[in-house]
Image 1 (cartoon, rainbow, N blue to C red):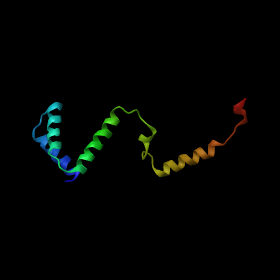
Image 2 (image 1 turned 180 degrees about the vertical axis):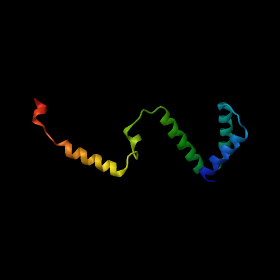
Image 3 (image 1 turned 30 degrees about the vertical axis):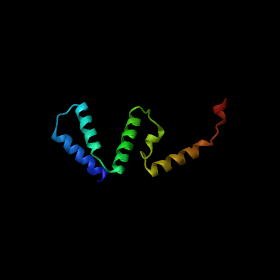
Image 4 (image 1 turned 90 degrees about the vertical axis):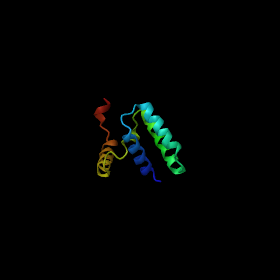
Length: 94
């Protein structure tokens, strides 16, 4: 069973029993996990949980911006930096 299928199954079973408080949802989710027999799905769920927990307490990083600008924008930025980087204005040092 693929992760998408498991997530769909979990969301469908949660929707059927709405409304639930967070504790009930956790217990239901644990029951669904206990029924899993696919090691790969378990690894993916563990990875997702670890990633999401890391995001909660994480301060913003420059790496969060990866992919935010286009390649053309990045090239334009690089060109502007290269053109301006080595310019020395003697009057700035006075």
